[in-house]
Image 1 (cartoon, rainbow, N blue to C red):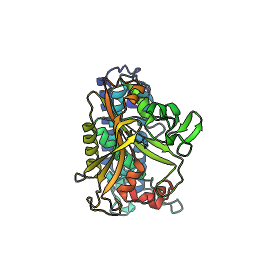
Image 2: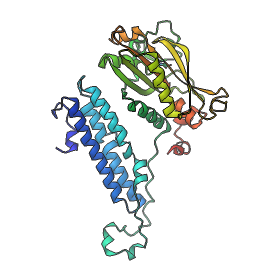
Image 3: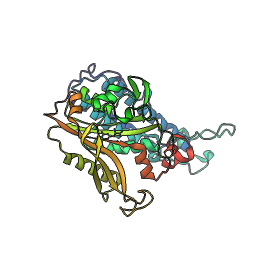
Length: 383
Ligand code: DAH
């Protein structure tokens, strides 16, 4: 059976029922991806247009949203996997996704050598006839438009995901249209909390909202997988905010959640300090200040010393020397209970951060609206 056939069968149909089988299936896919990429690069392309055509074909074969090999792995392997196999499949899938980042169009094109003819086509030796370009028809349209680049928010999200994937977390997602149970009640957010007000949250009806944060997926994941659990949850969120330079009614968050036996605040501090150093450089320091969130106790705000001015004060850190990164805390015992986890046996920590804000800080962008206006002059700067 070739890989095209394999990715259209569920793991059960393939007779895979253990982590080892999952691993070797994914290893096979990774090897194919590696071989196909190496083959393309070894062959090169006679000209830019051909390079783009070949690069796009390989990228689409693996990464196309509709029908790409990875989307089929998601559909046939990951989604229907049973509870016991899911974490292993999820981890392997994330690993494969990271690896096949090399098959993104931009990266392929960069790696693909062009064998430009040194002499005009008529003087090409006969042996090269196969690669000789057809005589130019000047009435044909010009070169193919290059594919776009990866959006700076997506890029930021992937950078953050990569750090946590390396730490053994895996990626979970949840619905953007959410019940008020998961969005508020299960997270210990009382009736009286101001975010329940229409002003902040878009209500679809009295029991349903457009999620204003990614935290509800904490509960969904606890119910689905139980403990121990190490996940990050990237996704879109919506708030009833007027668009201005720092607010957008749609924005992106990444939630983190670690649940295990004997987890302490020191694990939270250590992990987030490591994360900040990986993202902003070894030199940065982190600062934890007390805060309040209904779903964590104790709760904190994390800031990082400004990576531009080293804490001296500059435009990026608004002269304060510090950049606010995220909210975090130890998961409230009631929240664990609501997710079906016994707080006497397990404990955990969580955080929530704004991806758009991270991208703004990193690239010194002063208007969040630029991310969503689709202006190519802005977007192509991140190619
Ligand atoms: N959900 C919070 C928000 O949107 C962010 C947050 C804070 C998430 C603390 C967490 C946390 O998981 O522990 O403002």
